[in-house]
Amino acid sequence: MIRSELVQKLVDDNPHLYQRDVEKIVNTVFDEIVEAMAAGDRVELRGFGAFSVKKRDARMGRNPRTGESVPVAEKHVPFFKTGKLLRERLNGK
Figure: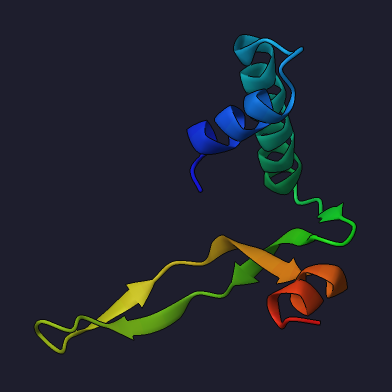
């Protein structure tokens, strides 16, 4: 599901809301999650999961084309851990 499909589903389920308002709500939620993660905070949605940021240390990598060793800089990557309820639904419990 992509963002526009989510917006359309919410509009269909809530006919009393305007599409532009639903788009604004969805965009605000996603923007707040991104901003919190950019600040290094953890975002937890109970039953769904938790978004956090993990640090990957600098290391020596390998160019697959030439086999040459290349330095890879330190970086921060997003991480998602599923919640118990989501895991149970995915596994048919």
